[in-house]
Image: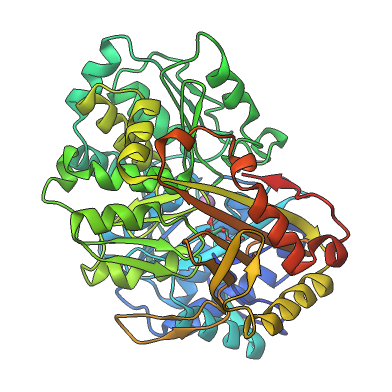
Length: 543
Ligand code: VG1
Ligand code: CO
């Protein structure tokens, strides 16, 4: 075994987006492409002697090859130890859990999350810091600067290690320990939730269906829901991670999880349905013939949090990303705790969680989590819901309807225009920004604009400022339209339009969502000229 120094030249555009560097697999397969990025991360970290790194991914195509390369590079960089998931598999929340439990310096997650996989799909890489959370912008920016200047990387010429067998081995002086992908994570879940109560609920005939979408959460859900909580075999569907996710899009929303939606819409539907995404950090919650929006899910969990053992002491605060509906704010107000509004992306929650300012966090994009780790967590959200259902004896629909009666309903929808021309998308945003200054007080349909701005966030802990995080038009009655461009796509641009309307009157709590939001949908089109700029009359995905 020896360590080689390899000359390289920089690749343009290795700047991490909302959640890591995501590109087509073919881009990552170019010689030196992955190596350049990994060396840039290591160079940014500096001396790693004596330190532990956690490594794993969502099992998508190129995962195993990338794991072997990164192990050889970590050995060349002088890490003392790497903990790698068996088969190269670790969900994003499991990486966060393992980093924290084992006091690692950080971790590398190989995933493009909800983006499609396979040889023609996407690949991704993300670095998480010692608190278990995604690297903040200061770190990702330093990594990007390094990728622009890189001239060489170091790598051991050691042979591939066997990822299938748990246990320790060595590359150069570095210890490599292949760990059970699920064990640490499952142990943490047992500390947070009342497994006995959930077991009793399931034993009493309560039925559930969890859709692993052939992505990483299948093994976690099987081990916990079927193995530990006694759900009958077959309760977890599409449970085996596949390199191409079975050809499907591992994005748990009513459009992409069509099989689960059909199961939950049947007359003999299970009591509870859920799905997770490529890397296991998202969750979709369903009742029988009933969808729960992610924003409502966060609010309902917050309102009932003390029913779960891990949250019995109450919540310190609730944080949500700016485009997420304001339903959780109303719960925070009722509980007398602070509500925080951050830019999109889980990295912005890390400081609030570390500082003990927030306990629960959520995003409208099917992401919910808490201070138990520093990532959003799909299986955690499922267990939280099961704990609430067991503790209250109520159905999913009853819990949500009662929530609306108490707090009012925030009708909410996101319209995505995927794969539009990048130039046109940028122009649309630029022309919106020009209009902002004069919008205050304007009449739009039956609404009056309270304020309009481009969201800027000052981190209350470290004072860092993030600008241009989404254009928002907020009406005097609290209804909102938000426009932003995705930072996770790999083809053209994706415009996201977020629509929210508050309705206090229970008589109007059961309208079809798109109908309830129709006046706002018209205003969004009128203000932004979406059809003119993008050439699209309708969104590609509506959630
Ligand atoms: C999207 C979501 C955002 C989420 C991010 C990563 O980002 O909107 O809420 O944090 O994906 O999720 P964007 O920039 O495309 O809107 V995951 O599960 O793909 O890591
Ligand atoms: Co994800």
